[in-house]
Length: 147
Image (cartoon, rainbow, N blue to C red):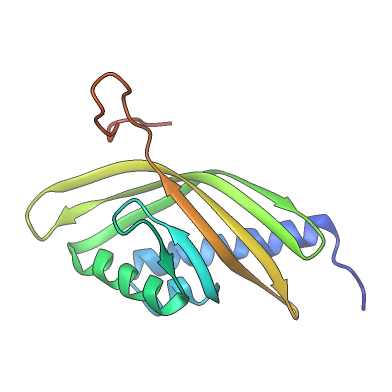
């Protein structure tokens, strides 16, 4: 078995993240979680404290998509991939914009990190962590920060 070069691993993970961007823009929950391991653990921006398993994460993604009226703009900036032998991680700034079914306009950025493991010849996301900074003085989430 030939070990992939760090550049090849980095390219594979960039391709996964680009596919995830397209999946969000298409509001395709199945496609979004197709890169996750069955036993993924995710820390999302919304409750509960954690999501366990791809099925749980897919339900959460569908709920997210169903809340939007019309298209969702989605992008990832400053994506950094750190390749390893059998494990890797990436982090970047994620952005979503669109109109909720309630009429509220959304235009927000958050931080996200994905941990990946090589299973056979396929990279799978085994852990995902999303977060928003908050103002220590007020305790309020900082929804308006932009890169």
